[in-house]
Length: 281
Length: 78
Image (cartoon, rainbow over the protein chains, first blue to last red):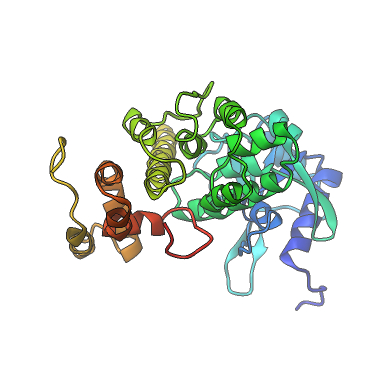
């Protein structure tokens, strides 16, 4: 159409990332739908989402203007104008807008230098691109939107299976167990005998950050305690987890209760954050 | 009955979900199920203590929780 060669959405992202890097001088990591695709979830997306090391959205605007291949892009509305900017790339055949979106500060994520240090590089759309790490991508999706939690469910499985595949040393095994989040990851770990060694599980509990990971492990070594969880595991749930048999149906039900409670709390936090910004607006 | 109060009854689960839907609090069945789960989470946790494994597997609230949760390798397995 229009005489232009057809490109896939992945190729389009790769070309945009090239233009940002080489023409605009914007240091950015791919996040959002394309990052989800990179990690193996088949998912449609028409937006191009990045987090960037720019100091401000003004800096993003001025640098973007330097890109001759992206051209002058009309800016769209943002409910967090100091943290997030979006620019219209064009319209698809069905009339929907294509958006190029930048997070300068995301309330769910660490600062860009930390994100960059943990970034994963991979070939996508024919180029090597830098993506938010899987752990950071999971965190970025803890929003009030149900669709983001559907992505989380699949990404958790992928991360667990990646960790299990690389758990060839005690240190890697501890890393895997301490971050386990999916039922499938847990079941595969059981089949592999990953929980057999008490000290390994104890060390994993010490290193747990996420309450779901702790909920998976605690019935196995009941007196072990994490150094620091990102969110509290409700004492009532923890008491019950210490009473049940490891890996039994009761254990798995309680893990799902913890999962649901975490999700409910995270959605509410995101809602409150959004409301604060709308009130300030 | 537990120390905290009556146990969540399996046969009450679907009627309550239907009521959530009919009242307009939810626009889809999945949304109504989510509302139900969020409103009864502590009671479901209590079921894990008071019921045996077979009763737990057969309880409609537990089946709902598991269906909305992380996937097992086998469908419907608890």
